[in-house]
Structures are given as C-alpha cells and as structure tokens.
Image (cartoon, rainbow, N blue to C red; front, side, top):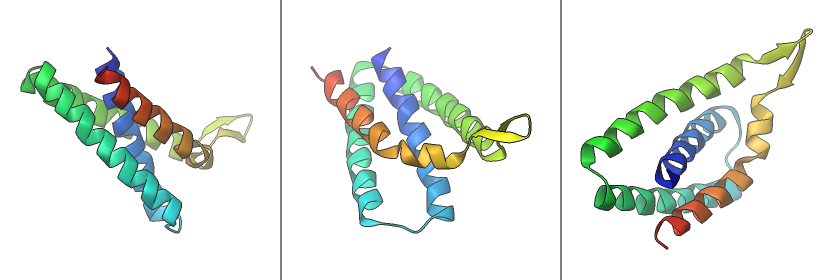
Length: 112
C-alpha cells in the first residue's frame, strides 16, 4: 500500500513539474528538488521491482500516470465556485517542497 501511494505521489510530482517547467522560470531550488525526487523515484522503483512483479509495477505506473495527468489537467482548467477560482495550479507550485519531503520520507520508509 505504501509503495502504491509513493508511486502515485511520484507521478503527481512529475506532472506538476512538467507544467511548472512550461509556465515558470527555472530556479536552482526547483532543480535540486527534481534531483532529490529523481533519486527517490529510483529507490522506490527498485523496491517495487524487487518486491513485486514487473507487471504489477508497470500496471500501477500506467494507471497512476493517467490519474495524475487528469488531476493536473482539472486543476489547470480551474475549480470554480460562483465564478471565483478556488484552487489553482499556483497552489500546487507552493506545495512542491512539501511534496518533495513527503516523497523522500516515504521512499526511505519503504526500505525499513
């Protein structure tokens, strides 16, 4: 279960960063976050391939890839109540450091 949740968060992070890269200026802080999440992704996928079947890891990855893309697209289009945006993509950008820490912590917990 923890592996699945971590994998979902990895794909969500990758989709958010992909949109961020297109819309915002790149900074050193984001670059360092991307490196840390990339290392966590390698560790998480290594765990997945050693503890689960390859078909399970690829199947979950494909499913989470699609779900993360749909979530980010929905947020980009906007969630409006009475004509006012309630949750925009900029709030996702503000949560990137927290998401990075959560992904790193969950990746470390998987091995313990």
